[in-house]
Length: 344
Ligand code: SF4
Ligand code: SF4
Image (cartoon, rainbow, N blue to C red):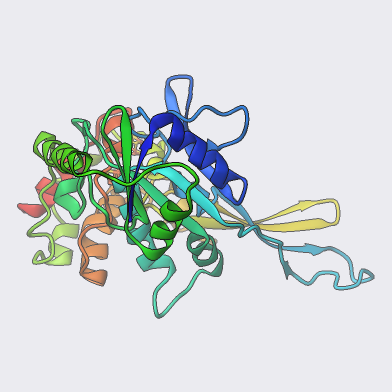
């Protein structure tokens, strides 16, 4: 199923879908783009490179109420945790970049596998439709093509959009995506010229990819050998342990669980956490197995580029979005570190 939309027609179609479910779109706020619910006051902007924060929070909130209880033995059900009400209404992320859709597939291996299922992540992910927007002009820091994706990769997407300037071509990929395009109130059938133009835009984008990351030999490396490599102190030297890399990353999934008490109300929350913070691995005994900065930096890269590789045998835990490269305040670059590990 394919359809062609004028740019205005596409926004109109999304507003129509917004009457049936929640539609998230990229919106410019200050110097950056971020995904927001499309409502009357919001102006979507699809002429963007990518959002600073990845859209992972739409499926996996930065802070989520897991359970709640009322303190006190005299209360009915007092002191007993009940699952907090959650919202699983149907939602669409429109304009997600292919690297960020691929990232959900990487995270899915952790939250939805035969051994473990995170009920909240799974339900929210299953309520979500992903409408991707191919990248006509990949950034110099993008390297999706070398980690199993590409500027027009369909991996993890329900629909893929091709921006042809005046018009958008929407290609349904999954059954869910095909139905959505079919039912959209706007749009018209795709002619041969537009189909050809879409193919050309995709080929031209692939040729513009200027950055890559070496990963081909990571699997064959001996884990303890890499763990004890001499370059970790140097790699970590400038790191500020700010956590920017992990919070912006669409494939980082670590969290912490905390109980918060307000009067008699207790909320059990899970909040994103970061392996770059010293508190992350601090034991109740006071011992910290990753007390030193280089140990924490090593953990981040070993997890993404070695533990994940060995455990799942499905590539690296990185979709090549380039956010950690662009926003690390001291320019620690995963492409360089992967190169060191790959050739060690
Ligand atoms: S963004 Fe850079 S400085 Fe901050 S924790 Fe990550 S690697 Fe360290
Ligand atoms: S590790 Fe960096 S480049 Fe890879 S997905 Fe995370 S933020 Fe993007």
